[in-house]
Length: 76
Image (cartoon, rainbow, N blue to C red; front, side, top):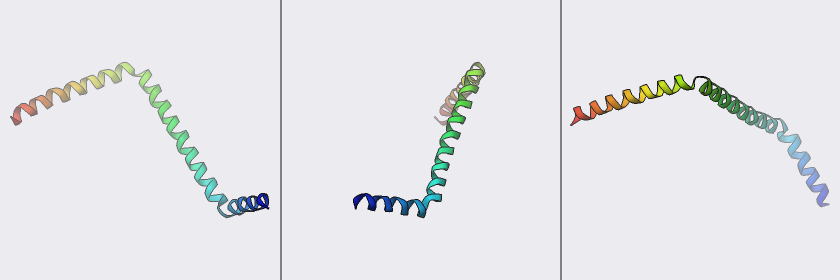
């Protein structure tokens, strides 16, 4: 009796929201795959252009530090 009830409930949910459940699972899987793909691409770009990226970040940080200090001095 218990086994039949669980089987029927599973069958009911399966027939009722099978497509929606499948679609949501697919979308979640696709989102995870896309995130992993983007992360791998970013890691590849960072490793390839590491010196360029580091130089660019250093220059922008220096720029912001210098101009931030000038703005702070001007405010006082």
